Length: 341
Image (cartoon, rainbow, N blue to C red; front, side):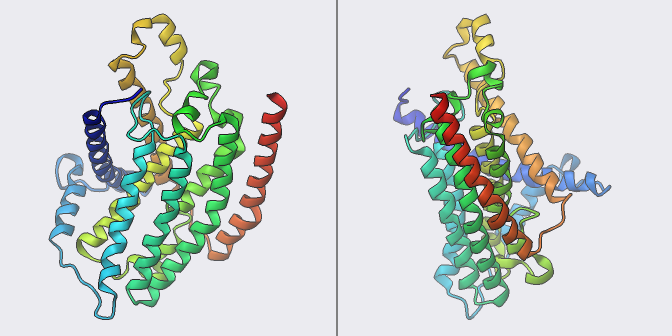
């Protein structure tokens, strides 16, 4: 349905602030989960149970001195973190958060997501180059090679979903998963290989462990943001966690029914008055949020469980295993769709 302009502006304002706050919550969650995994308490000083620690970190970064290396390129050095945050905060515009609740319900939403996530590599590469540091440059080069390598497999995993749904519109992809009481129709059951490929490549695209080689502290100090401090470093930090949450939302949207509430058709049959109501919209948003929250926890869990790959292992996995599997899976899905239809 077409929403009035003021409603679209209000939704956009709410979603942007939601992702800003969620980044702080995810930082707290990461520290607490890592604390439990390592048998230590995690943050427990600032605020009740340490909950205000991420906000204290933000205040610290805002007032910290902004240092730019003398031999760096000042304009590009400043542009890179802004580019990362801008791209991260633009992607939510095409994600449907409930039926009819989407800022930009474009017919090529999948292409918009892939295009924007592809551009994010420029922020990392520019940060590495503009710092005029060998550690930063190597981190930027690693990240660009890694993201380009894994984007191919990710794109093919998304193509398999598009073939099944017959649409590039994210809302149409979600609604196509409404069969089987809005559970058995999920793409994870119809296309399990594509789901596994997308989840693995999402780890690589967000530079999360075990694919965090661009920030490998053992050999690259801090990777592409070694020469960043203050609010600029905070912007990279913000973009990383917003991208983590966005990846979780995309996994849920493409493969786990998106905003569809499990057993939603039965619920609407039992309570017809829910159709089109605000309560149903809240239930759908809550369903999507729970699914995304679970995958955000998986991102954190994997980081503190698996060791980092070596670079040759990372490239071998991407080119020799994931890409051929993704190609075969796409062909099999295409043949299956052609035969069944």
